[in-house]
Every structure is written in C-alpha cells, then in structure tokens.
Image (tube, rainbow, N blue to C red):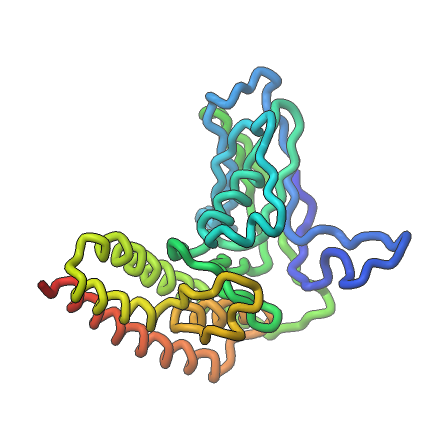
Length: 281
C-alpha cells in the first residue's frame, strides 16, 4: 500500500551534493506489490491509478524484467529522438520480477503523443517534452490486475503544507493543462500522419508540406544547446507553456490563457494550410 504522496518541488538531491547528507524522498507515489513466484511474463499485469470518482488517471502494462536489459548511456540516449527515449524509459519503469516489486508513479496523467524524429529543447527549468498534466491533491486508488485477479488500495496525495493556493486554483491549473495536452496530442498525431504521407508525394507537394511542418515543429535540434541555434516553433511553444504551469501551485494567469489562445490560433491556421497541401495534386 502506498504512503501519502506529496505535491512539492522539495524532492530529490540538492544541486551540489554534500558528503553524508541524506536524500529527500523521491517525487511521486510509491507502490509495493507482490507477484506470484511462478510469473513467467505470460500473464497480463496492469497497474491503474484512479481518481476519487473512479476515473482512470494513468495505467501501466507491466512485463517481466529482461535478464540482460540494455543500458544506454546519457550520450547514447541523447542521440535518440524523444519517442524512442520515452519508450526506453517506460520499458525500464514497467519491468517487474516474480515476488515483491516497487513502482513509483510520478503523479502525472498520460502524456500526449510525441512527434516522430523530434528532439526536445530546454528553456530555463522546463522542457518541450510531452509530460502529462500533474494531478490535484485528493484521494486516489491504485488497482493491480494480475490475469483478472484484482486488488486495490486507496491512498492520499497531499499538497506541500507550505503552499496555500486558494480553493479551486489547482483544479483550474489541471483543467488548463489537460486542455493544452489534448490539443498537443491532436497536433502531434496530425504531424505524424503528414510525415508518413509526405514520402509518397511528388516533390513539389512534399516541399509545400515540409514548409508548413517546419513552421509547426523544430526538427533541427540535436543537442542540449540546439535551441541557441534554432528558434522554437509552435509545437515547442505550446509544450513550454503547458510544462511551465508546474512551476507554480496556483491558477493559470490571464497572460497564460492569452498565450495559449494566440498559439492555438496560429497553429490552427497552419493546420488548415497543411490539410489543403495534403489534398493538392
């Protein structure tokens, strides 16, 4: 059964570790569960996190841990596009063994679809990565389904007691983040479909589609300093906006709402152009 999880930025190691200094607890809700000793990987296993109304927030399909998992270095990971990196980390996260297991949920909803071939950029303390919106404090339930045999436990997620947002502010933040995430999911699926279709297009049409895609997504970043050479596009700006909401435990500002409206209008215009270009002969 998980202990109370805390919504707070006061987690993890300090920036410059001091010898013999203890570590803060890891961010998230940690779940301990037992898997039968005869588990071979054939039995489907799923962990699901539900909110107080019984609605699914996030679910994870678990699998038998590889005997010799491939470990990638930081440099090797940096060469991979974001969807491949995400798949790598997710496989490591969802690996289990027969017997007792530990799973840590990061208190986020499922992320939006990612763009194939895209490398993330970083701006200040947040990235353009597809990170699901953060939940609100309250009661949650974790459900373990092992081949149809279900067990569940309820736990609490509490806010850092040093923070005092007004009633409804964190719900407003979540609602806005979900709105942006849903929009990014639709945008990225459209971009991925266009990337597949463009390979079958005549050269002139392909060039037209590429020009629009280049206005939507920055594909040229390949390093941590790539954003110094290549300006961000609409996709990255929308993701920066969504991820920046986590920097403050408060309701979104008027400026943040206005920024989304402006970015959405520009993106919608490009998507309309893309739809026309995809149909042209």
